[in-house]
Image (cartoon, rainbow, N blue to C red; front, side, top):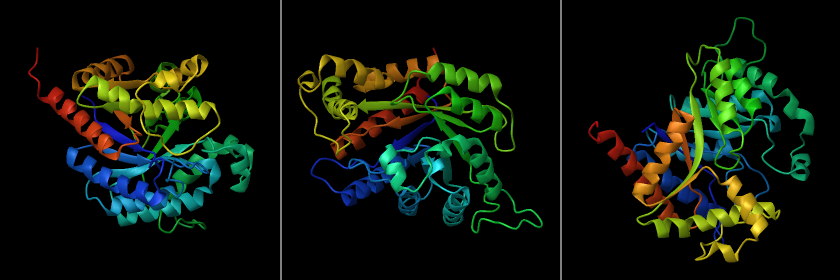
Length: 334
């Protein structure tokens, strides 16, 4: 099995609070560290009642401070919302506090709606400058040059590893051109997955950071002791996808016994398409599903998302997944 990592949206559940969500995430990353996961990322989203990771660098500091070895990072920072200098300072500070453990994934979407984008005081056209902003950020994190008049302090010389995130072929081309690792958000936007990976690998140019392509594929995984229980827990994610179609991004809702009573036929089609790259079931089904995904995508790493209502079920899902990965590694050769 390829390395496994976690993307945590720090979900606020119905009846819960952001404080509880953040405490759950700390407990989950400590659990993930014990289980041997490679990295643990949180993402920038604004004005969403169901996500408590808007202040992404602050959350990363909280999680890194409660762990010792697992890599912690952003999946990602929506760079058009920020000055590259400020992000270099924030992540340079994190890298100074937790050396060798900080990742910085970068996206060009706003991570919110257009009205909230205006509240962020950002120009909607800022995303057009994303390639230049990435390179500027890269320069601020590089060793300080003699005579350099503007420095990120802390930041200069930390060389925090950058990743390009994407849900289309644009990010694939940029990651390839800059020689950076690439993470595809197929857990919610799977349509361009294979095309993007093909472009990334075909056009990759080696860089100081990376000698050969490294592609990470996002996948929703809900594992439970039985297929039926996994499918029931997955209904919270299905409800969330349906709610996005309805323009509602509230707290994560409890699972339901019959998802067909929640969505309309049209909503089912669209939500199921969004969640196409999902693996749901007991240990055997999860193993088979992940093996197929890796075979098809040739992924170098999987970034697993599991935004369940039930915190203990979420912990158990990642536990089963780690057990599946270990059993695959220790299985005798055929």
